[in-house]
Image (cartoon, rainbow, N blue to C red; front, side, top):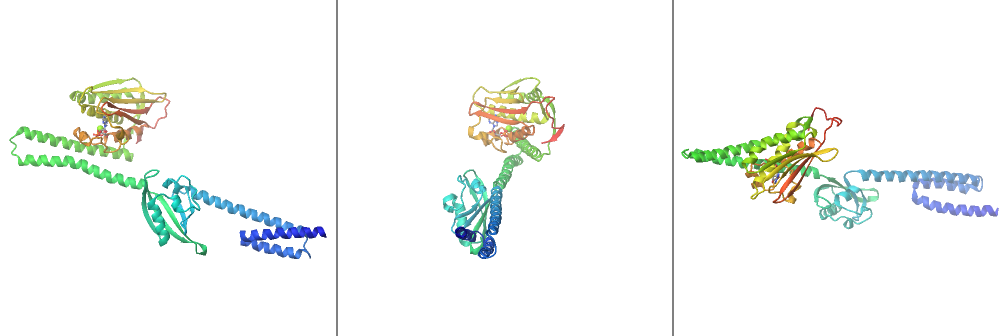
Length: 430
Ligand SMILES: Nc1ncnc2c1ncn2[C@@H]1O[C@H](COP(=O)(O)OP(=O)(O)OP(=O)(O)O)[C@@H](O)[C@H]1O
Ligand SMILES: [Mg+2]
């Protein structure tokens, strides 16, 4: 009897502790506990203790299942949130972070990405973002804004604030952050492109218009001046048509409308062809053109397009070498195998060179190191972007190194073609 009494006292204390825990843990569990407590209170009379233990065990299993389900769903929510590409930041009424995901840290360059429970001012260093959240926590209205950040990299962020009232009148602000950098850059690029094209067309047009007007006002007596002016008009109109052709070429390459007739080509044939075109021009401006190409290096490519690419590079090399004040003035075009899988066409000159800071922008449309100098030699700044697109359509890459005042070296690296190489099909679009 004494044993039963002690056991009952222990059981009751255990039950008391459990009751407290369960009461705070879950209301539903509280209902179950109430049921159990009835059983226990009746147990002295009719229900054996063994039965009570069984019920408690059952309840324990039930609670464990519920707890693990709750933990699983919480963990799933966390995983989902972390995988959302937009930044999600939920801020409570005390300006503390209630929930956040990794995109927020990525966009704003926050290294220690455990933000929950921390004050916003402690974790956000972007003044505009802080201001936006602060204002909307106070006003508690829907709002959106665009913010640009420079750290860890330049980004344009679209932020939407959504105020939400939770149960028990708890106010939180949900901030959704979208990375719209590529859209903004595309907008900027379009704007810049239109302004560049207009400018490039306006310059020759103005000069054609001016010289034509002068000719009309003149009585055509000075044949030398007339010829001179007509020569300028001819030059400028040729430049305009070159520009338009280049633009159309680029557009076709970009839209994949350029037809590539792929076949096995000996690199030396491309280089020979280009040298025949460039030689007279090089001679006329006093630049020595050297060719050294190993025979029988094959690539799988479109002959005309590869000629266009190498011609652009060689034309640049001759043009920008002729601009140098002092000797030596030479351009060397060579081709060789560089490893088991690749070969390269190298166009090396002893020309004016390119400043280091300009090298990374060289393949952008309309980019010219020295606009005035390039325009003087008839350049539109589209040549290298076309070269890059052609090379990439051949699964190759282009590299450049240069030293100001000493010369430049452009290297087109292409996969070597052997009968065993996989073919792209005889005719594909870029
Ligand atoms: N071999 C070179 N030596 C020095 N500068 C060069 C050389 N090749 C290119 N550049 C620089 O790179 C710029 C871009 O070259 P790109 O060929 O794209 O345009 P461009 O020669 O000015 O005009 P075009 O569209 O007629 O080729 C040039 O304006 C020039 O400043
Ligand atoms: Mg060029």
